[in-house]
Image (cartoon, chains in turn yellow, green):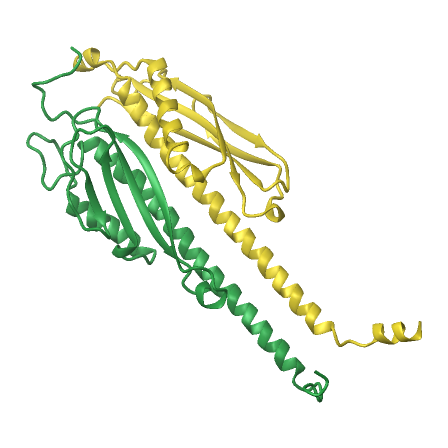
Length: 184
Length: 174
């Protein structure tokens, strides 16, 4: 008993404890930063894809006969189907390592707004939820991702949310995009 | 061990050295990750921008097609636009390779960056094409301190569709 007490009282191991704490902190911080870069990259990528796919889909579904008479009319089901097809192709194609699973939550086409020149405008609004393999369970500390924005279709603040589990090694993100097509 | 550690005078120096190494690693890691993050973000935006330009113009040629209204961005214009953007975040021309390929045929592919520059053919109305950027990012400092593999590659891909009609004499489907 006396021996053990003596061993506990000296401070020889102290420096190693400090060093190992420092190393652990460093690893933890690094994983956090990598996670931020990964999340930002996924968000940028998918937002870029959605912006392009939105314009592409609207442009694809334009009625060409009416377009020659300077009337813009978009076939909404065609535009939606095209958008979904393009996004599916991009997210599950050769580069599918970007996200683990994805869910195209909403695709809406609007045409209520008329510009000051009296010409029609079309908008496509889309929301996609994604799950990605996070760097580590240790930095997966949030169970949901909330995206708040000003929805100018309704004139109010709006939000979309996706929920998952903490520390399961999967990050969640929700991404919204609006693209516009206007005759000019 | 006891013989080696005759007294404890050097201990604080050892701890100090450890501390400095860890601190430097943290700073290097931070520097690397900032540069990598910037590179990803700029490459991502460039891909979106190139796709949009190629969609509106029906490809990116060496010169403005006849009857094209307004400003036209040629391949050499695009080359300098992209190079400026990438240089601003510390990437050289050798670190990115950009390809513009029509998906189901219908035009010549173009490329930019590390593998040289060549203009695309004419992508006629509603031709779908893909823009692929392969970015070579480097763990430059962390390679020295932590031994992370230095050269890494990330592919970025966008799909676009030509909106420009080159030949009004031939319409499909009417």
